[in-house]
Image 1 (cartoon, rainbow, N blue to C red):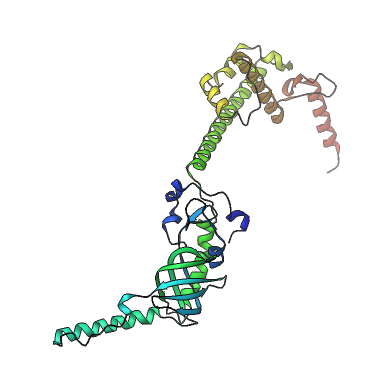
Image 2: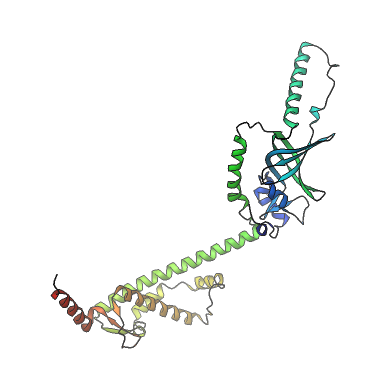
Length: 337
């Protein structure tokens, strides 16, 4: 069962109620929730549980109170979460009728016997005593500030082994978890959810393309450094190499993609693009920076503490690092095993 704060949320417009399957079904709710549901301000007789419009319910419980009137029974039904009054109309077939005036042919006697048996069964199923198990289906209504069910169908449940009650106890938590406790989304909320999914998809596509560009660029930068036997370099120097810059430019999103991404992700990105060329140069600079960072993680390049922060050293061609590495290996080899 939901807490009160969740059950009394803003109700869905009546035009959208038919989109919720709960509206057309007999909702199998706990009696406590039936009595606590908020009535619709748009249409009397419609109630809301966690955003779901509910007009008819299905309850199973023990009869704890009985009152008989000329045309109906009043049964108090208890499902262990609460007690609710159920207004159950008498079946016209049960009314006492004189069958003695009927013709007494053999065929008519057979029909009369069958009718009497049927009337007996209907009376047995609909006239309940305190302690009987009853199943009631019907519409919810408010009578004298009290919530009650106006039954469209009710009958006594023969359940000597409590199979029906146990099955109900196991079924309701599953229904609550899978249906009733999940907030109903109207078309407007669905559109917002769809828009959010599109935005996430565009963001994932953009990030995936950027990662691909970084991987390709860092491999090409590594090959360029090794082939040209470069020992030190600045990032700005790499950005002047036409072959590398053109490679980074090829993997940039098209102008239309940038506009779409910027339009869809304007609530997430706090970047104001001044011009197309400015945006492209910043993107290229960012790609080179990430590519160099990958080379650092790989151990291909490094920075010395006492050198400029923008100066990078190539590991394979750094003689000082090679000498230090050899000294460490020699020292380690001298140690006794």
